[in-house]
Length: 184
Image 1 (cartoon, rainbow, N blue to C red):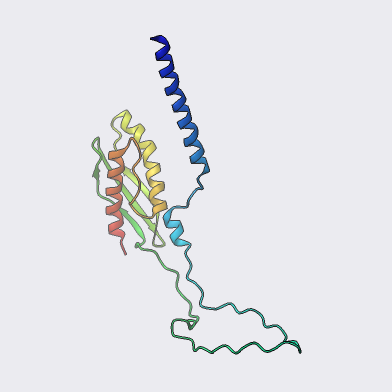
Image 2: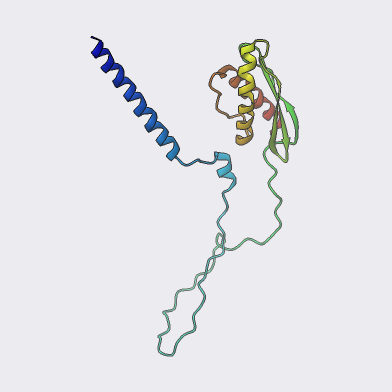
């Protein structure tokens, strides 16, 4: 009976170690992807100027190339006149906007969105559950993570923090109401 227990325990330990090894190998092999908002900001419009290879001097023995039909440029292909363009401002009005106090079960979460240049520049935590030691510990770790995710996403659409589900939901609710006030 003891040999059987040892074999079963050993096989579980071996399976766990194999799982950990494979998981860490997969995680380290994946390239880090930029956040979706960063990818969207780096998209550039294609230029309308076609690339033309330089003409070579014709030699005496070469035959002239066949004439290609000439096309008139359409309105879509014609380059736009060069006019100075203003930089896009962003989707929010500048200022500081306080969100609603949202219920986080053991207290409330309230944030203020600071908008500068039409973008979310900072999120200030005005209130969070802090009357219990566990609430203070959880929120002191979760709130900076949520703030950083909101700044990266430039919205209230952030992932929740594990172990701080209620605070994460209340953070999203309060930030969403602040950004709704700042909507352009």
